[in-house]
Image (cartoon, rainbow, N blue to C red; front, side):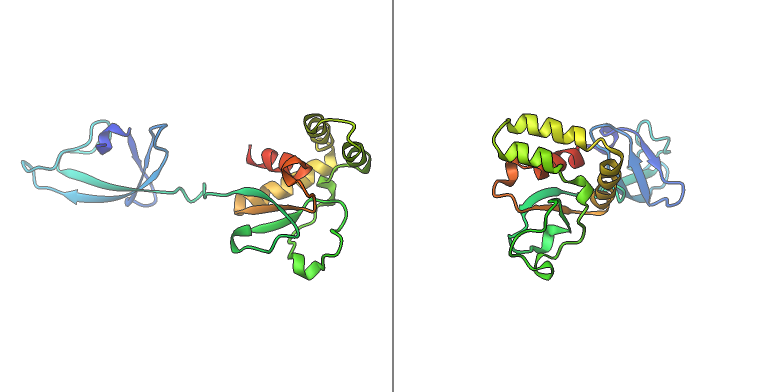
Length: 185
């Protein structure tokens, strides 16, 4: 696709080698190489850019620095540590049985993010569905203490990958999955 079809380009006021494409479908920063052409040669300006004829741009899309690709994933705390885990956050109220603290390599343990004992017991007793548990848990996360802890984990997510750790045998049906959804959305 020709560059002029992507949208309008705005030069960075601090660095003329960087331009921002303002088209909604192409929100990229572009590294721009300007090539000066003498009048009357093949260089043409781009419509809508305010660039005079004689200047041609070559652009290469790159990721915006303020929007790095980050992921939040859920894993069992008993699984081996992986290099791409990022910050490892234990989201269980109780320390996992039989696991040494140094072996778990937990970076954060925000106990305020865990479901209350009452909610946890209610769910494990099989009295309600996962959907109802998720709704009740989200309501608990609205408390001031939980909200502050959630903001702390959101800050970790802004900085890079985060792995939420739980001892649950079915992490996909646990509070960790609810947290991951809230952190990604």
